[in-house]
Length: 413
Image (tube, rainbow, N blue to C red; front, side, top):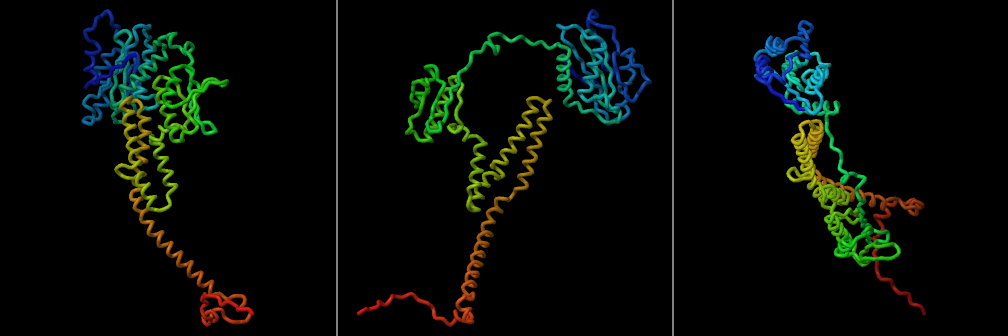
């Protein structure tokens, strides 16, 4: 099914479009197959001459009621055509199509008594025309920004429900049952620390592994490739990653051990993980502030870049498919939260740097307190002095200082 939308100033202006100079052989007897006049209630008949409905101003009444607040073109018409390769629908089926479309676009949902007035008219085979006003019964105006997308999406769902969607049968050359199994070359780090590549069963993959630096081994375990045991760990990871890149370029399926994959170190997640490790390892406030500056810099920090990414993702989703506005809003809300986080952490790096002086002063105060406690402990009454009833403070004050000096040797006869 295909939906086509257009707007008009009055419903009477649509009469030439509905009753134009088409070939009479393809024209039906014009008839009104369904309608919902909302506020007009039961005063108007459902079935009748469509020209009386269009020309009588039944649908124009809500727009006339609000006067200058009405849009310049308040009349909305959606023409729907079905696939000519399938049988035509009955009037009852077309009426059901019309009700689904006014509900999907939000013009007149069944549970909204203040929705817009509409009428479904048939003048041609395999088609229906839905004429409505965008002015609601409560005086509001229906927003038509996404109507075309909602209408076409609903037409696709209706066609699927009717079985009108043609799906081509899969070719036997691409069917899953006829696909040859693809060998997987696994490059792993053994518990012993050696790097081994297994699964190379052809000469091309073996040649690529040899070119990367692997040595081929063939024994009762089968063919495999191993790096020399003297290869340093960083070199082993670089060689394994390079070998995986060459094999993948040659269309091989490669399972590379994450411990050997140096490529993820260049991803944003690994960079943030590296910053997290730096934060955990910081021993001074200056070092902590330097790492936080990479995260919270208002011009080039990780947080502002993440916020920009969420905002661009939100815009790109609606550009690719305007119907995905709900998904786009989720990314937009995440972007707003990140903006709030930036505002909350504004100036936090400077506060971390200022915390250094406060910590230094606190350390000095703790050192001074420790020294005073040591002095008081030294002046405390010793058990020996207390036994003689002598005050330790006085004894300390009168006792001469003990000075280390050379010992006098004792002569013996």
